[in-house]
Amino acid sequence: MRKIDIDFYMDEDSDSGPAKLIQRKNRRLGQREKRARFLADLVEHADKTPVDIHQNFMPSFQPAEHERFWLLSYLEEFYNDKQITDILWKVKGGKEANVYVCAAHPSTGLDLIAAKVYRPQMFRNLRNDAQYRQGREVMDQKGKVVRSRREALAVKKNTRFGQELRHASWLEAEYQTMQLLYEAGVDVPRPLAHGNSVILMEYIGGEKSPAPTLNQVALDASEAKPIFEKLVDDLSIMLACHRVHADFSAYNILYWEGDFKIIDFPQAVDPRVNPDAAALFTRDVERICQYFERYRIKNNAHILASDLWSRFQQSNALNSSVANTLFDETMGTNDE
Image 1: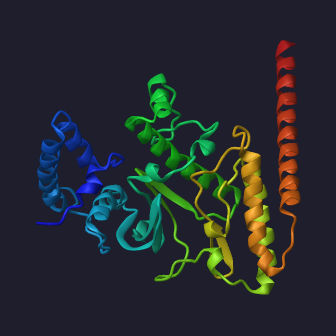
Image 2 (image 1 turned 180 degrees about the vertical axis):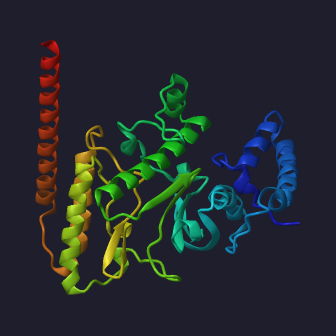
Image 3 (image 1 turned 45 degrees about the vertical axis):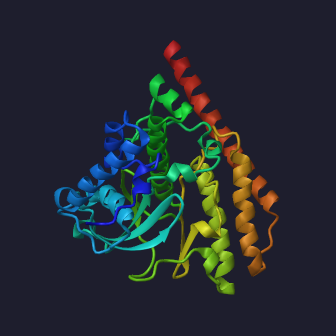
């Protein structure tokens, strides 16, 4: 019989299917009896899981038992949809998500795909996420805005159902941001697909060596300034797309063969609706300026951030003015 990590499944924040079903079934039992029944049911479920549930998807990567359970549950749909054929290895693990390298299905035209898989307990590790959610609409897994009073109340009260909605909305916002910025020409990995707790994207790196983050790299003197200037351009384009990264630093920039890709957008905010956007943007600029000081690239971060922000505001105001003029002209024509 296989060893089971009981604490993982008993976790209040766990969103794994069998845990939910078993906890609901045993809700009325006393704590001691509940734990004993839970253990018996879980062992029965776990023993038949590989055969009955994941019989077609048996990846090469062999993680710990509890990680294997949710990894198979989350990535199997992409295997069935012929987007990936295998999970090869883990790139890195984090408090919120792990990143895995997957073999791409031939139909994708790619060799490797990166899968960002949010951990079941991700919301236990999020701190002050309310700052990033200000003004952000809650979306479901299909990308539709949640408008019912019941759902809004669940999110406000942070119930289990509300956490599930926040989870789906958090991931949906990150994927939509990546799509928006990729299409606008910002240096981000190409997003490929997303689903329950997963974002598939372009893999950056070699066959056995993922791209390091910029903080791990010693740049040549000749490439430091062009990369800095390109990053500043990306920040400007992101603002034009109504996005502030809100966690921009050398730790969230991948470097590979003289080029880079900006990653990790779950906390990105819309400067039109988030009252803290200007402060978050200034912090982003400060961090990247601090990093490039080691290459003797001197900039006043506050002046640079203020200049970029002013340009954004002027452009936004101009666009709003043009839109209002066109509306007035249209209404005037209709009145005639």
